[in-house]
Image 1 (cartoon, rainbow, N blue to C red):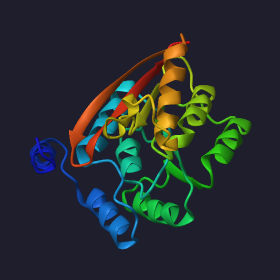
Image 2 (spheres, rainbow, N blue to C red):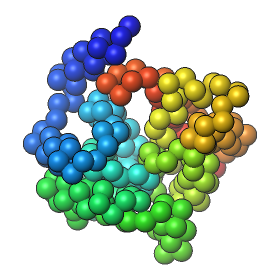
Image 3 (cartoon, rainbow, N blue to C red):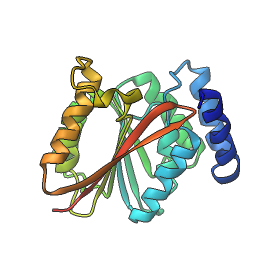
Length: 222
């Protein structure tokens, strides 16, 4: 099957099951106008995050990697009025766009975007007693996935759900000889998960408007 066919199928499902509304469309338009890279989640993937957060009964969410806040909006809409979402974004320009998009979506009282390297922000979160988070979504630089997972485990509890995006990387995850830092980051994280008896996880391959990739679902058992 071709990328064109994947796009057609994605549009079919998205138009019927997870169409963008005004706030989501505005977020995408703002990202495009600001010149942000088109690497955010697809609408049907955003809806999946939303449904997972609802199914989890999440009241607190941590997101590592904000970009323009499109996935943040999907996650924030799953939270109750007194819920809390903290999203970490390295690039100040991206964070500015995301904050405006969240405000436009009416989520600025629930969702907070913190700027800076996540590996600096995560220890700060732990020091201030943030968490435990019911759901963590990791979608940042892949080479640091092992470190992000370690911090996610420190900031969650038994029963929490961790979602990691872009773990297939066009099939590169199965290449034992890869030297790509991003791919090695994913592989090392998968090895960490597999070796940890306190975690139960799976990974799913996907195709669609974002190409051939996939995500991991991890449940904290203890």
